[in-house]
Image (cartoon, rainbow, N blue to C red; front, side, top):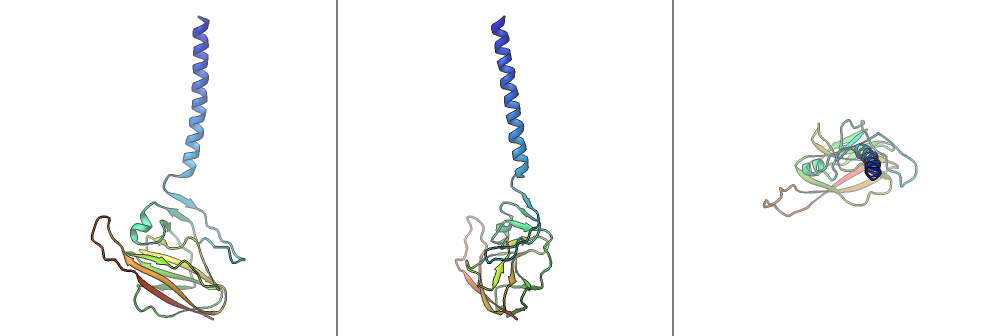
Length: 181
């Protein structure tokens, strides 16, 4: 009889330990939020290495990239920019801004948009970069003009192709001139 009690006690201890472990794991997973993550609005300023975050964001795996954006981040209520340029990839005009302005470049869904790896000194690119705005159906890059000058930014336009389908293979350079006074 005492052997049976010892086994039952061990079984209860093991079940209790497993239950506590299960609660901890579920709590951690709930905090992660699965595929969608929300990030509170933050900004940072000052040194060249800082990159402001523009607004509350949600990351939905595959959404932004399926629309042609560089990121799967979706910004639901972006803050107002001083200068907004809606670009299509052909004959882009010069965009004018002032020092301290936030400049927002918007590209329509339906093409695969990208930006060159470098940002000219004198501009600070905000994070997230190449995010999607569902309501406006655009991909967005935002910059803060730190000092006066004329800057050339390079974006790229590629076909947005479905997996397994025939697709033209080309990359179009989309240069944008930004004049900051």
